[in-house]
Amino acid sequence: MTTGSVFFRCDTIFPSNFSSTGKSSYDGWTNSEFDSAHKVDKRIRELGWHFMWLALYSSRMGVGRTATAALDRAIHSGLEDLKTRFNTAELMEVRVRKFPKFYIARVKLASRHIQAWGSLGLVDEAAFRIRPDLVSA
Image 1 (cartoon, rainbow, N blue to C red):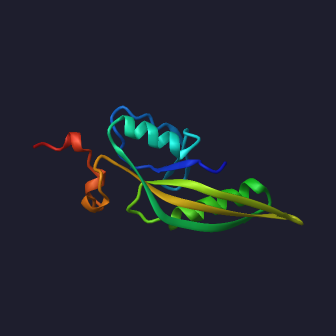
Image 2 (cartoon, rainbow, N blue to C red):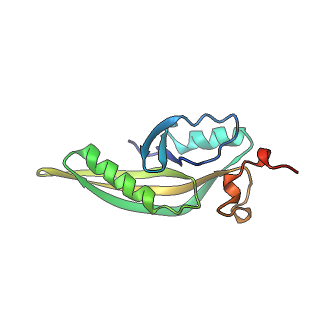
Image 3 (cartoon, rainbow, N blue to C red):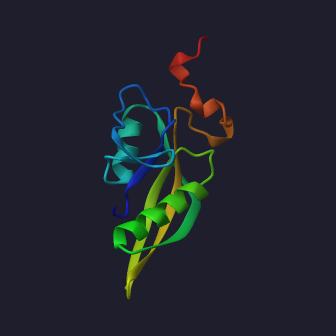
């Protein structure tokens, strides 16, 4: 896992031509195959949707016998802490320190959001889960 990695909530609605295959690795979250949020942003905007960059962060720490275990615990905790209103997260910082017999990982995740509308003010908990092309006029 590297900085710039992107996670999507499992119930995220995407544009119809957007491929979001990834590994479901954390409760309710999928690790994207995109290696950076910039690539997600570019693809989403090409399809006419919006990728919001929010200034809401979650910093968490995890402890484990291996660096991978500590990192997984920190990411899992950080994703749980993000507001449920937003459907995407970006891994901003990763630090892992080794101690005798254990590791401590610290991560910083940023809230991001994918939607068809250009304003977050138009969105509430139910609205961003409905695809606009499925709503009848």
